[in-house]
Length: 206
Image (cartoon, rainbow, N blue to C red):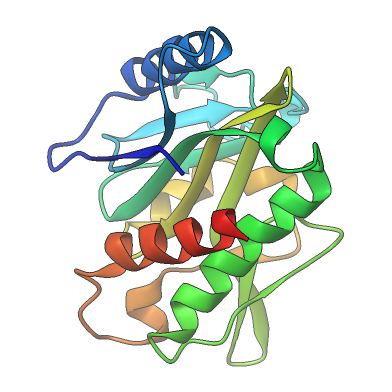
């Protein structure tokens, strides 16, 4: 299994990252490049998926970048771990639902290694935790599939400023909040990206 692992230590601008993914996508079609898993962090940015509504942008002064991924409006910024990928589903049964489940299981399993229980929700895509009786989102997933190649990825809130979510309706969900790992359990998460990579690779091999 030839999957390139790319790790960026400095923040990468959102538009540059997506441009890189789309170029990799084209190269993969032509069999001129391998599949990709890329972990990074973005400077502050608000992005909108194809199904967003204008009324979900609460602060009209912010710049919103429209994307080709699925989903609605979300926020990326410092303290949030991003995992992007370009994965060929032609090799994996052309099953989008199975691939989304694989991503969900990867995040849930990784958080369990930090003694944090999380879960998915069939109605609201993403990964959730229950904190003091309230259900809150801890990870967002946004995937696009083109010619059976899946790209874009997911983000996990580690130690980001949650006030930034007050400017939007995160992922179009009004009745549930957003949280980060540091607030769930104050511990070191320096190894999170590597654990995500390890668990994702294992599941892609199956």
